[in-house]
Length: 68
Image (tube, rainbow, N blue to C red):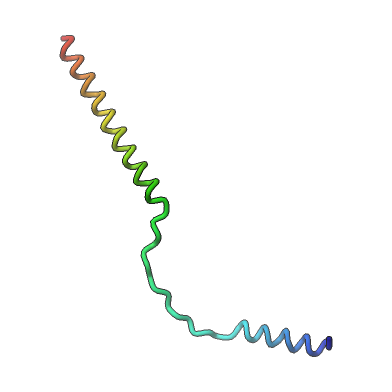
């Protein structure tokens, strides 16, 4: 190939790549809820753990009342 042709082609590519393009605004959407089911399950497990701890504490208090 002709070196002038290659130089001209490279210059045209650079000019085409640097040209201003009208940017269309992207619509703002809510972010996709990533790992939502896993987070919901984790929150539910934490709630069960708290309920279980509270139940164990109440049982311990009842045992102390009965021994006195």
